[in-house]
Length: 133
Image 1 (cartoon, rainbow, N blue to C red):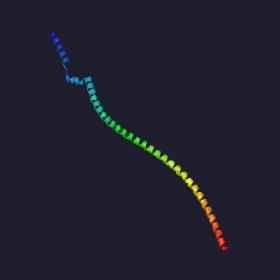
Image 2: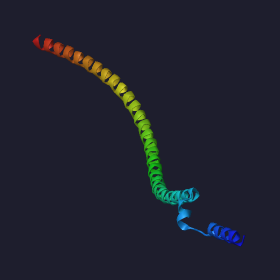
Image 3: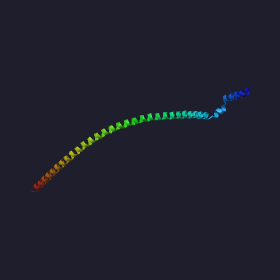
Image 4: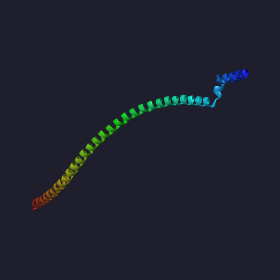
């Protein structure tokens, strides 16, 4: 019986000892190793994503400032051009009115010139007729 007890004690002691090679081959150990590898990979990807985000955020800020300035400049130019168009439209209307007035004045002057020419020709003809007499 003592021998049986001693054998049982040795088998129990053997079961309590830690074997590193057996621990590595256990399925749970493999899962833990895979999880640790995944954690390392995720940390690496997170660092890369953070670097890309920083670059993108910088680009967005710079681009936003440039586009905001370009929009403000374009709006100011639109206002200037709108004002210029209104000024030139008013000037065009004024000049068209002056042209119409000058055309009617030229027509009146031409009519007066034609009448004066007719009178002078008539007077010249009378004068020539008197000299012949």
